[in-house]
Length: 154
Length: 154
Image (cartoon, rainbow over all chains, first blue to last red; front, top):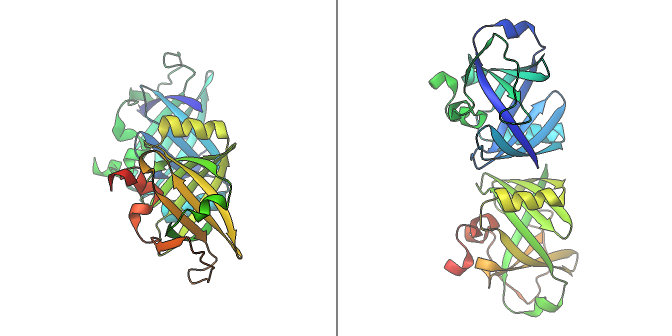
């Protein structure tokens, strides 16, 4: 089991666009129950299945397994809750951390969030000027929530 | 993706008890949704995570992954829907097939079912005289159903 401590923010400008290369992430859920989410993701030629427990603050227990990308594609297309989530991710190093900026597609087009993974909930980090309000605790922004209530319908 | 074709029967005597060695299976569900079940199982020192699609007749799509047994134990104890399913399994070769006889414990104590995996829905197989009525299509006997509606409450 790993522990994921992650804070999530909105962005206030497009400055992030030129700071990292966009890679396409395609992901779906075998369980979107917040007590036990099961996510399937394809990034490039890599497939993963990730199990996460309920969030407590910015912290979640996490178990991640590599799976063959062909099987990840089968699970996404045949089994996962629909619609899938598709987004471009840019990884942008700032100080000693890496911001992950996710630009959503499809029914979530227009939504952009920036996440930072920390070693502790109160760990200090550098906040570039394109980072806006924190939404860590707002469940609407959970990827597993965006399936049923996409950004376009907010 | 694998295809699992499995028929399930009740038993009508205790003759199976002496025909195979019992191994303890401990399993739970991260999703018990019949469209996409996600099962975690420990058998001996082996952990597995198994994803199955909706049953069509005796047939289900199946994806199975080995996971570390310590992580399987974490998932069972911390994350899976409760209660877990515990059962003794005996594997009993009969003709060219293997019967798996599951003797349930806990809230399902008293329930015994025998399963046989086939290469096709209409494949012929030898039926020993301790095999009773078929329950393949009775959802009450699905392991994922026995969590919420255990045999003791039927």
